[in-house]
Amino acid sequence: MPVMWSRIHSTLGLTPQELTYAIVREAVDQGVSEAEDLDWKQALPPADEKKLREFAKDVAAMANAKGGLIVYGVTEADEHATGIVGVTNLERDRQRLRALASQRIRPLVAGLEVFSLNGDDGEPGLVVVSVPMSPDAPHVIGERNEMGVPFRDGSDTRWMSEHQLERAYADRFSRRSFQENALAEMVDQVTERINLGEHAWVMVSARPLAPLSSLMPGLARDEVESLVADALRVAYEVAPPGASRPEILRQLDTDTIGNPLVGLRRWIVRADEHMRTDLSWDIPDLELHHDGASNFAMNIESWLDRDPTSDNAVPTRMVEAVIAEGVAAATAHARRLGYDGSLAIQVVLTRLKTSKPMVAFGNATGGAGREGMARIRSSRPLQRVIPVTAVVSATAEAPVLRSTARQLALDILHQFGVARTTLL
Picture 1 (cartoon, rainbow, N blue to C red):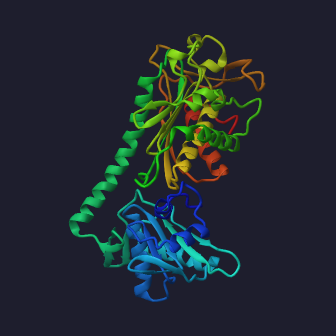
Picture 2 (picture 1 turned 135 degrees about the vertical axis):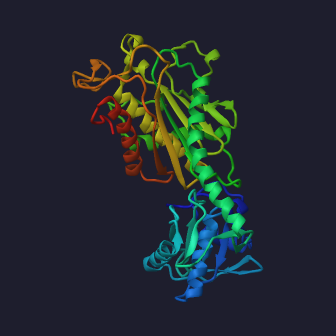
Picture 3 (picture 1 turned 30 degrees about the vertical axis):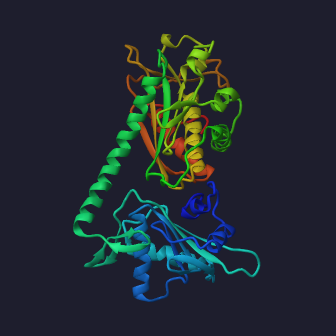
């Protein structure tokens, strides 16, 4: 997957965009300095045990810190880039580096990318190793009894001491606990802010597994409109529009998108209730957090155009549509901020406590619209739906996003005894 944000982008004053040969050449021309998350290397590691261990050490050290880039084919002096000499960058060269990382680093660094950059005819090629900030840190390198845990100290790579290693493992367990609690807290915050009424709501919450770099610029107010357009495009790839597919984000009008409400370190895309004449609360609620998290919520019962309190209906087609567009919005938001790591996504189906259980509804007549909706035969009513989670790369292609959305939808529908999805 392309690198959309890095130390190079930040130093050159660029916005998040795909890293290209021209961008690296500009960084070299300006003598950009090495840093905790940027390492210039003149040559690929040779078949020498010491050099091979050094490569694994460099990768693990970045994964144990903020992540970053190792760029092969660039000379440096006093830690500043001085020129491009190039390296061989065929697939066998890239595969060799992937294999070295896989063989020598434990646990594996998920999301590690090795790719080539080629300039115009005659220009020497480059190899870039993109190392993510890893939620599985600390990563250890070595074999048998010779093992160590490296970390980045500025532009240098050093070994962790015993107390640093102890802290690193404690941080790993804290990160996992934080992600679980943070997703639940996001749902609680949205539930307190919106009016659930007597309706069933689906909420799709997402958070980056690794914190965004402090170098990344936040999402500006005037970028929200184009981000929603990106989310719609991704949503169409995940679940193509048609008569059978409710379109959720389309319900947000231009004025609403262009004037997002200010929240706590986030933008809220939803018409202000005091400015609306229609208070049916049947429009979506989209939160775009400055740290790359997002929350997409929708009142799904209002789609039925009937009295929801009569049967506590949960239209399964609407559940799938909200999940598809929620996954699309989450990944589009993360990409816009230049995040290329993994997202933890949670889906919650909830409503205010009532004496009646929720009931799965489908189209009994086989039609595509909302007419003829009735309880799905053999489905079972539920007083509570267990939240479900998944992990997906923010830069995943549409088929992977579709598979993730489908699995999340199935995990919800299976609790009602519904065996198949309709849209996904």
